[in-house]
Length: 77
Image (cartoon, rainbow, N blue to C red):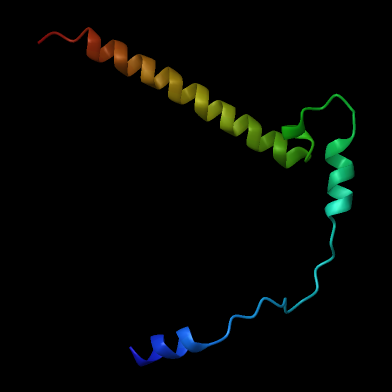
């Protein structure tokens, strides 16, 4: 209990311990370019991989749901 009181009385510091370069302007340029690429794929290869995994899991989940619904629907009691 004493340790919790000490932690709660400490001041919260919002200062960063290491300086991080601000790259917001570069990212804005990248995502605002008119190059006929959907915004969810403009981040590069990793965005494409995550998109495909997400879509694959969604399709698998939907198909799995349909199979189980049909299976339970036609079971004999």
